[in-house]
Image 1 (cartoon, rainbow, N blue to C red):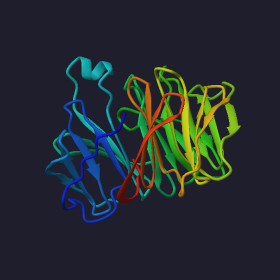
Image 2 (image 1 turned 135 degrees about the vertical axis):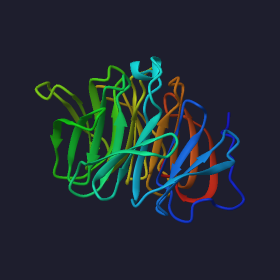
Image 3 (image 1 turned 90 degrees about the vertical axis):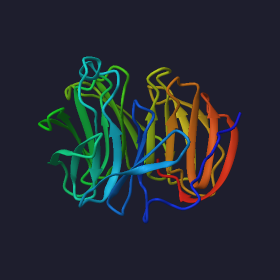
Image 4 (image 1 turned 180 degrees about the vertical axis):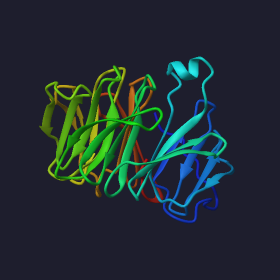
Length: 272
């Protein structure tokens, strides 16, 4: 089993592209340090610029298909985090709907809950915040001494998993509930993803390793070290496969972490 890879002959973006995300219409939106957002089709062909904004992006996430708003014919939009600490909500057509000042320092990561009722953001200031769909602050869930580089919701749209320093933390959005914390890597944890199907967590760090955990922080698998830091990890929607990205490297693994194939690219660090 291998991943089929497609690369355009010439780059569409003129600078670093830190994030991308699939829409429910099988369109891929990518954002770049050239301050543009571009649309791509399933064949990896560019379909034009969505918009150009005065911002440098860090993360991108589409509003979820499973939300009640979309089931009732709601609007089509996504959120992007920015290096100036704000997050922006942008429509599918490229219209800026809202811009919210969220963090001191960069807004590094953001994710909509599966039910679409909340947006979680994580910042360079070490804080994790939960916002309403309309951009109103509901709570500051956590405040850490180190930046929070990655965040993901649990399947119940109540618990959040995030990384700060070498630790991974799972915590309920009800701030009084007990949290689960464990040391996951010898270096900074750069990415985490939590499968809503299996409940397993995959992490990647500056120690060049990726690891698979259960949702109690028990180690299930540790992969062989890469040559460079692991900068991206992601579960497939059905929870049967996971992908691991590093410098010029993309690896496909089964649900327990065992490698199926490794592809070598000329892309620099894979960030998303």
